[in-house]
Length: 267
Image 1 (cartoon, rainbow, N blue to C red):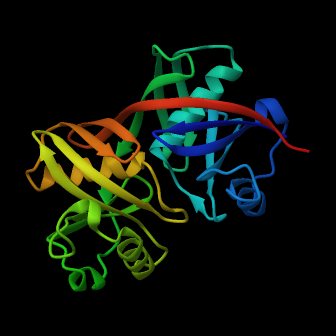
Image 2: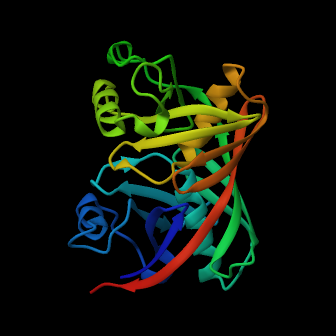
């Protein structure tokens, strides 16, 4: 099989396009094997880019542990870049079919030939899962859940957890909150860091701590606006770098980089 490897601010994915491989058998076992950072190639997830009747490409993502994710902001940007590369294009618009509907991605070139700036339509932000009681035991100032097709819990911190956000034990908090939500959820600690700016530490369902989470940044900006912390255009800073979230009345868009790393052949 032929894969390309990409990352969005360090949140990395292997991408397999049906156009390059023929019909794909998307399964959790292969994702676990390839994404293992010690015995495989290593990635946060494996994206299958299949043919779609109503879009340029269809998005399907298995996390590193083999579980399936409904959507990924960074993953959508990486799939758009992989599809454009396969078409020998360095920029342009890509329509992506997701479980939540068709999303548009618009890519523009940058000074780095390996990196595109991609604006992804993330769709409507809706209600998330019921907040678990464990949040009250963790000393969190404020919490809200929301969804862009996948579930997120946003925590305003650090509260009484730690002196500052960087010193919070995110492994402990992420695991406890994720496991307390039926079906699991992504968990994000945020702080306001300036006018229309947030700092976020992401914990992703099926992966753990990651360098960045695009869908999480989208939800975090939406939640922070509902709390009166930010306006309609929000810069979210994560360990891997920054994205910009543009919030409408019903939907949101995510703008950030997608970087090509390598071509990979497996036998």
